View 1: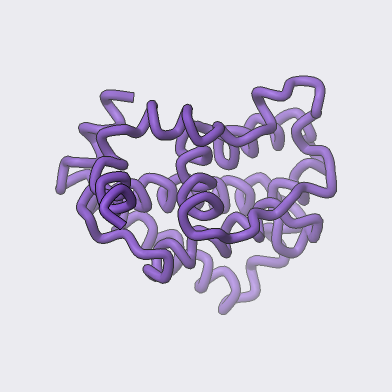
View 2: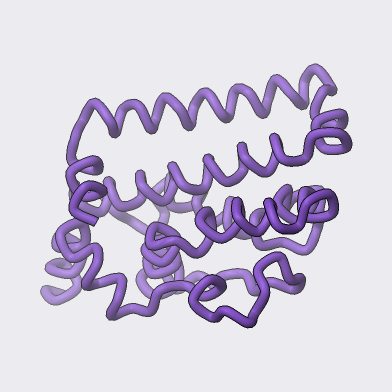
Length: 180
């Protein structure tokens, strides 16, 4: 994770993530505004799923950035957005969860997109921040994109693992928690 830590401390790359997130938001708005989104969902659901996954992964990284900069609060707009994105990505409603929508066309590929977007190391860190630090109830899947046979591919990292893997990024937050 050393490369991730360096990435999250490099201002140029941080700004690139913010720009990419803004671009993805504009793209989504344009799709809805021009009514092309219905066609994307029906004919090309992998595009909607890819946009959703990329958005989630960028938000996970940016959440760690604000923690490492000492700017983390549970009501930070980026943290609130991250939580909403998790609710959508883990929903059993195909109008919100485009991984699930895509799984109806290609379940194997949908799983390969979903797992790293939700349950990666960054996903574990996001779950840690949202549920352990902020006390938010994380959604529970009611469907089966990721088969439960492999528990490591369908569970969030536990608290100790997150605190070890992201120890540098979490230093300001953990220090603040110890002082309280």
